[in-house]
Length: 450
Image 1 (cartoon, rainbow, N blue to C red):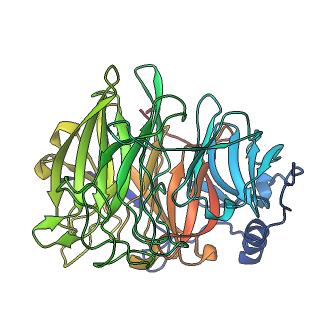
Image 2: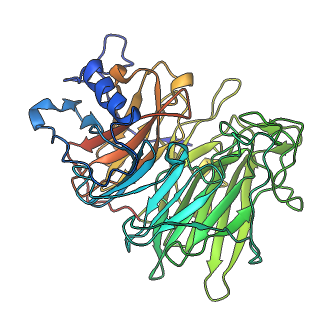
Image 3: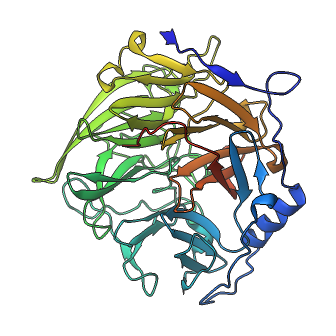
């Protein structure tokens, strides 16, 4: 393994934590967050007025990026270009000007249980609660439920939960990029990060090739004996077994799915733990046969939890594979931000470590030469930690946005048309808390995100 030369920007006395140059006050942040969570909107409200636009002088700043909490209003769950999808109270909303106004809305009584959403290129909105999936094709004038299909085309029906309040996170992802142009067709592909909160759920990779009208299972993991539905938030060793009984490959959940156009192939990585002779940390490679609507998957590698294959944040840039590892267990920890040729993913000696943040991380996005990564709060001294490179990994900096408290940033969305990444801030590791926007100060490289 080679360690790439880098210059590491840090400015604190203990050489660990950079203090942002200009801070937003916790009172200001909590006020905006409370307005979002507290339901300033009444059920059935058809429109929100414009949110105040933050002046540049009011923005919090580090040496590498500006940052701000989302404006008061609906919880912004996803974004694409100039559009944003959000929810508050018993209503879902669509903005066409990056959450300044919300002209489209419709009552949705289960809005507080939304766990996933994606805005497709043609404007369709697909969103999910714990175990139900929905589609709107007309800017939220209407929406309708989608019944997922299994690999054979039969209806895939969610299991009957032991606790009706905990039906399982069937569709909740940890990553934020789920759509790709695949041979001229937009494909929606994602996996569920489950068996932590919301009840036990089977672990699947889902896909759609027809703008959300049809959603099918691309890959179904086997029945994990550690995460049966026993009525608890994360499942346990007793209760209803979930998953494909004929698949010996088990996982706790999916960390990331990404597409490599150079190979016309998808990659997925999973977690989380060691189960005796079986392991939950896998890397899979899948190819899709559009003519026959069939998938072919190969398990590339399975490894222990204290390895670089317990990971996430898969990205492909100019044919190279990038990922970040959150290995845990006895020291030494095999973790860091890595790069290799896709063909070398099973050969650690061919990997280049671009940077080692020292602590667990499994979320990363790369766009326009900017690499943005986050710390996992329960395992890091950083309260709300970010790792950033503006030059595709040649130089790095780390920042702790302490004013947000103990938060784990997840679900990184591509920049909107104003240049802001959207990031979930989760309390602990995965409980929904706030939304943060980050805008790199400059991109020093013309690299493109595949």
